[in-house]
Length: 226
Image (cartoon, rainbow, N blue to C red; front, top):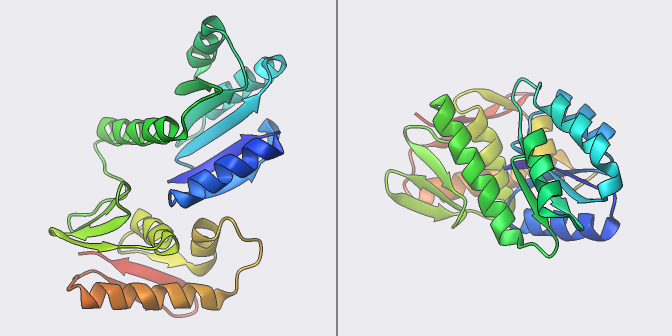
């Protein structure tokens, strides 16, 4: 999943950023709601996680939730509060948040809630955004699955494939792949993409997968999945 993490707490940002990356998510960080809204209006995210928000910032959060709901592809919004009563959490949910946690919360529960919201969104729209008739990614095992065959992906391979699957059978720019699969890095050598793609190709070939990653000259790559 592509996640936008919003937190003014450095400790919470470091913890959640590390936890999401280790779970093979693409994570972008913002330290305030205004910048998060700017990013969300220019790029697509599956979920926005707003963490360690003081109750004195509720008005800003309510305004942000209203704006997020107007986005063409509104992401799921998860709020994690340092403290809050049941009534305060209910107000946040009524304002448009999809889930609200209070510390101490379980990262595992937060992640499963996001995956459940994503499945529900796909079911409502009648689509499975990261599946094709041939291929799917298993977020629990980090496997690529094709007709019953499975192969384990590294975290970087998983993210790169997830990005390619969003536009299966269509070219994806190298810069887009870097922003998605290397969101935790500020400066990425393009050769790093080539290296991961080479590993992916070997895995697909050695495990008898029909899907293949094709090079689009001077542009990027394409996942041929049919």
